[in-house]
Image (cartoon, rainbow, N blue to C red; front, top):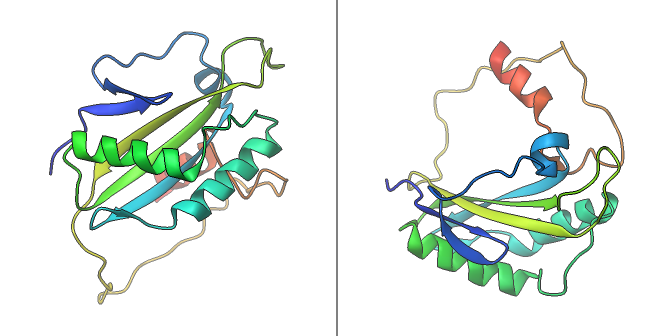
Length: 166
């Protein structure tokens, strides 16, 4: 499998080796971001319109401005460009992250956004697990029920801690 060499930031293809996080990036500082994970199977993005709808609902809940060019068609084209550049033509996991632009402390100075698209190769299969699966319940923390609960945010502390307990 080929590891990613490029990502897309605000519509521009850039090397992952040149990517840096500005010190005042709101996603890094405050978790001020939402994202979607999209599966590419045989070169086709699965459920892209559904992912875009949930992402847009999350952006609206977080009071982020939605640029006109941030639509399924443009995002599909950018992802296709990225998958070709990274040689992830068959199966990949694509992450589309939207974050509020820099400025302000806890209270943002702007509601304009930036976005990052990245891809990772996946093994070529959807297969049934015939051995079964051991499950457990993580009880150290509880997931809050809020208007943000339906969205994937940059704050994954609950899932990180659950993974560490597994």
